[in-house]
Image 1 (spheres, one colour):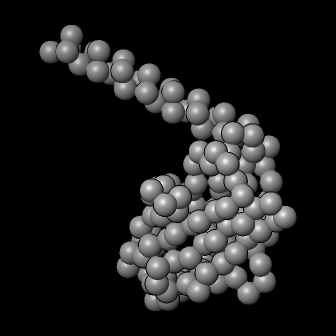
Image 2 (image 1 turned 90 degrees about the vertical axis):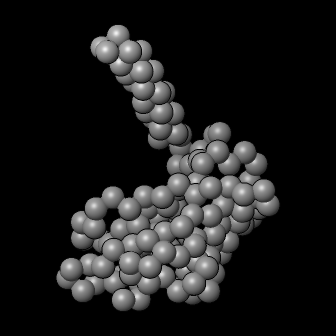
Length: 149
C-alpha cells in the first residue's frame, strides 16, 4: 500500500511546489495602484480607469451577509490578463481568509460567486481588494462597500 501512495504524494508535492512558484512569480511583479472613480458602489457598478485601461466591477445584486452574490469584472485596454482575484476584508478587523479567484468566461468577462460572513461585532463595512495579474505587472484597487445584514 505504501508503494501505491508514494507516487501520488510525490506528484501532489510537485503540484504544490509549482503552484507556490507561480504565486511567488506573480508576487515579484511590480504593482500599480489604481483609484476607483468617485461615487463607486459595488451594486450599481464601479469604474476604475487610466488613460489606457478601463475596469468595470459590479455585483449581480446588493451584497447580503450569508447569501451568495455574483461579482463581475470586465476590462478593456489590457492584454494578457493571467489572473483576477479579490480579497474581502474589514479595516482593523480579522475576518479570516475571504479570497476568491474570478473565472473568465467566453466574453472576456470575469466572475465569481461570493458569500461573506456576518461580523460578530455588528460591523458591515467591507473592502473588496482586487488584483489583476498581467505578464509584466499587477494592478490593484480597493472598492469599499456595505454588506446588508
